[in-house]
Amino acid sequence: MKRELGIARCGLACCLCGQNETCNGCQSNECPDKDWCMNRKCSMEKGLEYCFECSENCGKFMLEKIKPKAFSEFARRYGIERLLDCLERNERSGIVYHRDGIKGDYDDFDDVEKLIKFIENAE
Ligand code: SF4
Ligand code: SF4
Image (cartoon, rainbow, N blue to C red; front, side):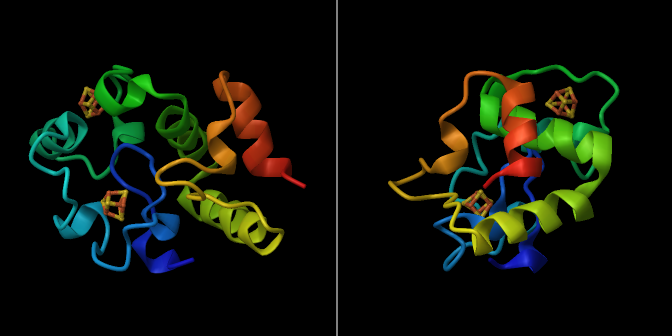
């Protein structure tokens, strides 16, 4: 895990992303998807670092997906450091963020609250 890369504006975990050998994270502006990422564009226009800081909580674009939505909600409730602590501990326990392309152990969820619980208590 590259903890220093933190999480993306949308909540995805740059620190664990399979592409973080060539991309230094969302805030570095090196993301290959940066030109179409509406969460990036919108949060930058609002002067925010992350969507979870936004009072609109729009749930649009990447935030329509369970994983970024749950990671963002976790960061909003408990803070980024606690999220990173959990992700680091989970990685040590064998939880894989990107196992098959962009899918991994955090992708088997259809409910935000269940994924939040998994981030906190993954075995
Ligand atoms: S590709 Fe996207 S999610 Fe992956 S490290 Fe870069 S900005 Fe983060
Ligand atoms: S939560 Fe929605 S409205 Fe708020 S910054 Fe992100 S994309 Fe924009």
